[in-house]
Length: 505
Image (cartoon, rainbow, N blue to C red):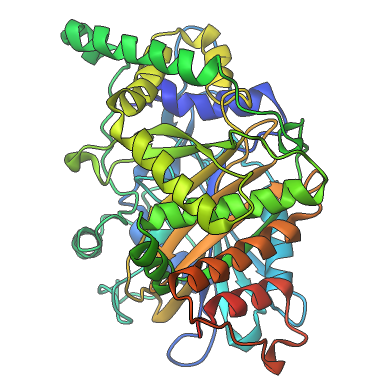
């Protein structure tokens, strides 16, 4: 039987339909070392490895019953009779020298292209030509299928806890499968993968099984709780919607082309900062992001909003039993990040205070969730207007999402995964977004921006790295940052930023 999208899932389709500039896919660039025998996997090997496990994720062989929302019912997921894995797995090569600059440029173009709604809503690409013999997997999955907080996209299905991985089918494949389900059941690998991922707290991949429920059913069964949620929704709208987010140059109409880059920070540095100055890892991540935004606006001669810039922070609302479910189980918190303070340490302390106040207010989380639930009661034909209001620039300026990942090395086809560069979608009139993923001792700040409005993105990226050094210096007053080594000469700007962030004295 086909399953209909929930109103929240459909929201991300509606945002695209309302404005061509909105691209509602999440994604990541996963960078690997060579395989144990010193080579790069072929597209055929990646495809066979993926096909061996993809049968356990039926959604990735399904398409929308209709490509657009509206009418009286939501689109449903239905089997794609023409499913062809080759259409979803591309092969690309970077130009020499294959550094971060070249990878960022390629990734920018990859993320600038929308997914084809007439096919299953995901794509992957094998990218070779990286310096040092490294290679990458780029993934792109529509937000209507998975959320970026409690779930991850199909690319992570390829990852294992050890180089050997779970046992594969001994019969070698000679071509990529073209029909969904043609690979047959693979219960053995599924069990091993499920067991492996359950051991990785807070980093569960999308997996088989979807718990779908019609919005409003819970409220009908629990009217008193529904009334309480409605009151919380009204309070949040009064507080956060009527007091609009400040207007900035980052909240003008945007185009369809993106620029994507990443800042890498050692996780130990972030822990050192929060241990010395108080707060949490998330407070460090928010302050680093705010420092970049502050520098970007200041460099344009723009007045810094006195109350700060409002960020939407997605929040996982999955229950324990829904940890491996597809679909969206996410709400949002809104935090005004201080930008006016010239001292990054003062901005950090203020961020800690505001974050604690937001999290300690029970109506904040309840209100955000309730707004989504109340919006779910609207019929499909008018839901688009509600969806746009939930992501309007009047409500927030920038999205900043932080997802904790496993602190051990993962592998694909025996090759160790070294970096994860995450992507958050950009809604209309939101020119910048930040996604943070921590993995294996590092935090990766994936920054996406409109290519034209934020042509000066390097200003933000450099300020983010500099703010880490300033916070470290405050955490350890005797700390002195080492000067750049000569090995940095000739390397890409992003690599220099990562190198500087790693130098902790």
